[in-house]
Length: 407
Ligand SMILES: Cc1ncc(COP(=O)(O)O)c(C=O)c1O
Image (cartoon, rainbow, N blue to C red; front, side, top):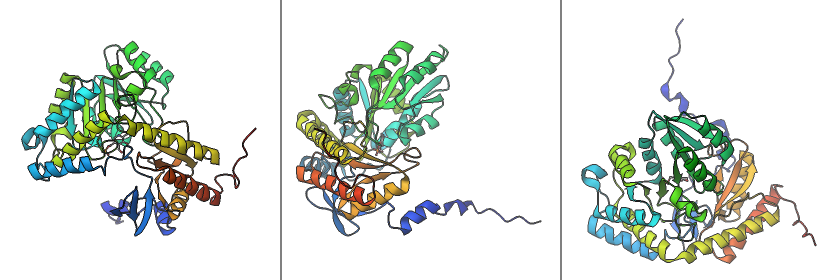
């Protein structure tokens, strides 16, 4: 009996749920931006809308100082390095930025790479077969990919569950290296990693603590050094990774830590070795952003106050926005299709947000993610809340009248 030959591309059919979302006009991904207007407005699908779905928390991606630094770097060094760091792609600009980042984060050394994703992948060079790696279940895909690429035995503990982590640390033989991997600020719903407990456990059980500060370096802490500084445990973090695509307003990433560790990563991490290096424009923009982060704490104060206000407004309307304090403000919806409908209703109201549905978040936890920035005016924050109110009511997600205030 002849068997039909399997076509290797047969897997490439769109998923039925995505087809349905596209056909019903609620698919929230890959909408293109054609223009950036003033005051956080962008043109998406031909219509001007308020951008409330970006990670540009400090509103630096359109800052004239970053643009000037990038333009001057292009004029001097060109638009790309056309090679990897070890061969022809290391710039004096990279080395200067690495020195400044290390000093800023109170680490001995830093390595600049081309994206935050690669900074995290590069961590895999630290995960050897003799090691046991403990990661929070909620970590970003890039950290999970690093764990998969590395050779350490992997254990995932429940989100921020220090009790479960400790029981696993206790069960680990003394001749295995131990590494704990988590995020300073979890990107999906903006809540913080329990770095205080994790730092205590790392010290108690001889583990190394690695923190991805992608969303919090530049934003949190008195000096902008991230969630670890905010929680008073900066000195207990052994290695910190970060991205330049959030608070730094450009593209790129870095790993910071002890000099021997950074040298090891520089010489062994495939993600740092086998990819073209960060272009001059992004490197210069990141350096300018670091100067602003150090000099203008009022930017982070402004965005944190704006986020507090929006969270209070949305909670007052009856939305579940979680317990966070950061400018990644979630509206917890649960069902993916309802979440995508809410996203569409918000866009119809002129507000562009992010929709996170599985597999980006666990089943049953789909959410709208609003990214507040330091450039959002009070009037724009009101506009976002009003759009949520109208859209939420239309979908029956919040009561049809504002809950009465208790006397
Ligand atoms: C927590 C976290 N880590 C790392 C990254 C990757 O950063 P990049 O966009 O620079 O590749 C992201 C990006 O979305 C993130 O949310």
